[in-house]
Image (cartoon, rainbow, N blue to C red; front, side):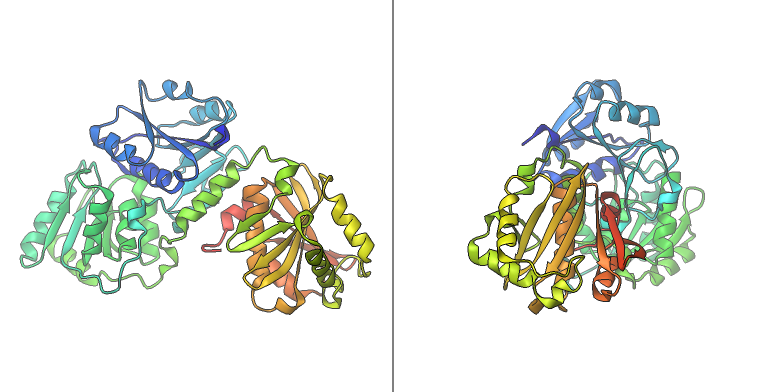
Length: 482
């Protein structure tokens, strides 16, 4: 594994600052550890932190909170920071070493020097101040949940009782206060209280899957419970929970309990709130099972530097499609490519509508063995060759890309499938920053597909519309499960 594929995570936890930062980091490392060399750095870790972290990746205990960590960096790592005490200057010191910097943040209260910001809440890009062309991974599809909370929940799961949890710190003693009210008002109901960080992820998930209702703080624990199928009532008690709370409430994911630091609901109000608590009607703002693959795609993209021309000549398998470089095709497949490319329904939309002679076709493929500015792949699905893609005019991580389909396989969504898989090839595996192309202004089907898959389009000129897509825009809008 190359040094570029090392990911260094930096997070802390305690009874004062809570365990949210730590468990979010553990969740991310769990998603990435099979493909990347993950290493977690902790200042003054507790035995619990060491036990949980060592299940996932290598761990180093730091002598101090800041400077000691910097001595481990040589500039080839991807660094993930999660805590509020990492100042802009500290971020800059990491970036200036040459590292790729990822910041997990949910309060957007400072300038960021991050290449990527992850916020699985409900923030928008406009709320952030950044000093670079930062990529934003925002919303529930980027939920930082440990694998135990992303498992499917059977519809027949037996549920019973109420579970109360206000995080690993709970400095206001909210767990006991809510527990006492619910226990007295609903004496026949099973009431569970999760205090501190006493349970591991499997135990937490098991409790949430068996609970009817959970009373929680407005933090990642809400996503954990919702993903396990529980109904949730939530309140907030520290500033970094406020935005997340308001998002949960506005999207109908939780029953609101308000600002519980100053006043928790009285007995009648709390019981009435629990009666109103229901399963979210709109699940589009919920964590999704595709989240781990989204993160793996993101970090593949961040570590895709150092690609050579030989990498562009390789064959790839992506999302069930095989991308076979033209130079590896046998003679019959080369003839098949020519047949599709010269089909009237394909040629009519090309910049050149001329029929390509066989000799020219074969000579061009032969030239691709030594060129470093043009690369072509035939695409195969379970039914055979279904199309082709190309990158030409490759320079400075930018390329003119092309696509055509087997005329017998149009109209079934195949173009969208190939296009989305090709984005992973271009951006995540080959490290491109931008692709562009020309589409005939009358090719409505192609233009509709291009807009659907994320391209931006310009005005028509000389009969063609310019389309383009950047790595940043692709990552920020990558659809789930595609």
